[in-house]
Amino acid sequence: MGLSQKISQLREFLEETLKILYYYRSRVVFSFSGVALGILSICVIVTTIDGANKKAYEIFEALGPDSIMIFSGSERQRTARERVNTLTVSDADLLQRIGGIYDVLKVFQVRGVNMKYRDRKWQTQVVGGTENYFTSFKWALQSGSYFSREAYDNAEAECVIGAKVSEELFKGENAIGKVIQIGQLPTKVAGVLEERGGSVGGPNMDDRVIMPLTTVMSRLSNEKRFLSMIRLKTNRDVDATIEDVKMVLRNNHGIPEGSEDNFMTRSSKDILQFVSVISGSLFLFLGTASIVALVVSGFVLANLFYLTIQERKKDIGIRRAYGATRKGILLSFLFESVFITILGGIAGVLLSIALEGTFEKLFDIPMEFSFKVVIFALVFSFLTGVLSGLKPALKASRIEPIEAIRG
Amino acid sequence: MITLKNIRKSYFVGERELPILKGIDLEIKHGEFVILMGVSGSGKTTLMNIIGLLDKQTEGQFYFMDTSVEGLDDEALAGFRNRHIGFVFQQFFLLPYLNAIENVLIPMVYSEKEIKHPRDKARHLLDRFGLLERIYNRPSQLSGGEQQRVAIARALINDPDLILADEPTGALDSKTGNEIMELFRMLNEDGKTVMVVTHDPKLASYGRRLIRIEDGTISEDITT
Image (tube, rainbow over all chains, first blue to last red; front, side, top):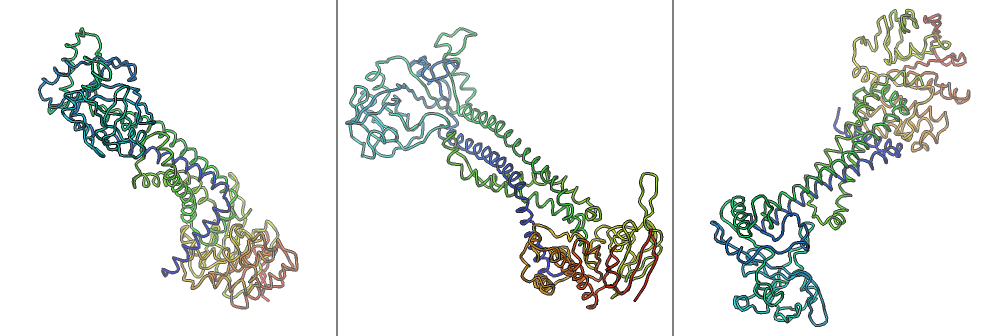
């Protein structure tokens, strides 16, 4: 048999399949939408988890795998506003002596500070940091410079502002050298930081003003002892260092044996762990939902298919009389079912691409689209088609031509 | 072309044996036009199903194109039907979702024989049966006579050796029925072997050979 014959047979077969699907379109629409929704949710899970992981690694990279953060307040005081500052400048000095620690960043944070440039007003947090703040966070400048050593030593009113603050107060104007009022203090803008974007579910990193720790403590809030956060970098094992840190701090704070810490330690590992917990629960929740959607649509497909077999008995009988084999009938029915689910799968993928932006806004989690997702979706829809089409197709293939034709 | 030797067919209802065909000996040669006549329950449809390779005899030998069909599997039988037999049924059995020309092309989808330009051939057949205007119509848009002519075109698309028609006029008025029978006569004159199964004595005159079947045996076999 020639190739052209095969091709024209295949064309006839495909055309017939399309006509059959059109003829039984109500069945097709139900099954198709079920599969599309199931695949859509699978796509959303996979892309969000990938996106969250990517984001987590970005943060991990930005913080550096060797850094440890220590926050004031116990684990029970969950929100930042609840926390009382318990860390002190002397803590920081003591910690510096632990072996392996090569960088200590002291931070004192003041929330909800009013600031003003001409008639524009904004309210945000002021972060007082030591000079190593910017190198420690690997945070580059958009323009201008970091605050100077003299400004730090002399507690001068100089600041570096985040991209968001620059946008709010200067609306695209050049901010360098301008004086803004922070609280009651007229402060010179030395630099504008590069945009960093929101963190996973957290506050906008760009909405902050950074000033010398000295200035914030003495001129903005009159605080001499306490700090909000200390950040360390170590060239030893992070977990071992954390143990040392805890010991030193408990000692210095006079916390008795058995009482809980009045500070929290966080390393980059914790962030990765946190993200993996989040993506795990996301996977469970959405995964269950999408499997249910797929199973339900598979059942709908199988049932509607099963019902139409009766209706198509004569169709099958005639095809068998004219030379269709059992296997041929089986395959053509399976093909029909797989065709529907693959179409549904493709629709699901397209839908998830179209909804990507909306989801990102809704959950504030970037979605990472990849080829993997498409393969994943197509394999799942193929399996749904085969599994739900198998029983009806077997039934169809077992119909004897004479019983079908007898009427 | 077809040889049946002592063909018997029984159905079993529980323990009881219900004999339908009780020893049929029959030979049909190329180019014959056979009317197989019998009342309902005489076994004529069962005999046609066996000849059409849709059913198997319980006993006896059956040679189709000098080949014993005994022991052929489903695939081989399907291939045999596809190559050698064109079926025509009382209820036409056109597929509702296909138009006339697509219905004619169904056997082609399962064919292993090379057919050059199948669509042209299908169009040509429909044209010959006066249906050129109707080739893109669905079965529901066709009259009974038109549907049966589409079905006959479908039976012819693979150039079969035998046309098997089961009560082809049963669902038609007598004028249309006569037209259909004339069509079979024309095909026979072109060299096709035709076998029409019917209970209607008025159709007897169309054939050149009349086989009457009564209670599972051949009671009369007249060649005119």
